[in-house]
Length: 120
Image (cartoon, rainbow, N blue to C red; front, side, top):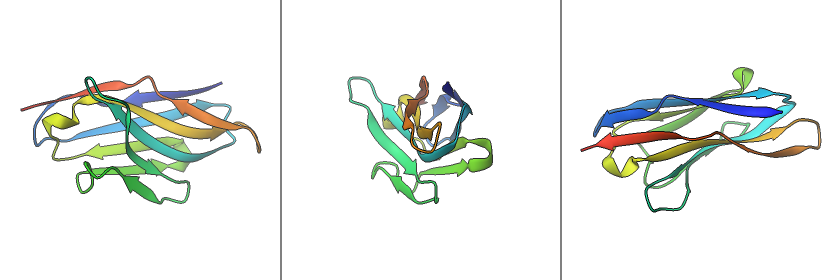
């Protein structure tokens, strides 16, 4: 009933920038936290950044000062601006949202993931 559709991503040179977006659609009552996660080659999925419904943000130490997460509640969309990209940022990036379809019924939803490759 709820789908997350990601856009952006791709191939970029080290030092470059990319902007990701992820829009939720379907039977949405409200969305609490939104976030981005990534899984690099041979690694476990890790948190990149999260943003609460009130706009409070949290970042992994590895991306602080380079990545910015934001959200547009009217569009049910979360963004990730990635600057000063490094080869170690290469990973599949997934968006995540805690979506409520009614006052009491909420659960995690995930996007399908998109590859971001940073060349040196």
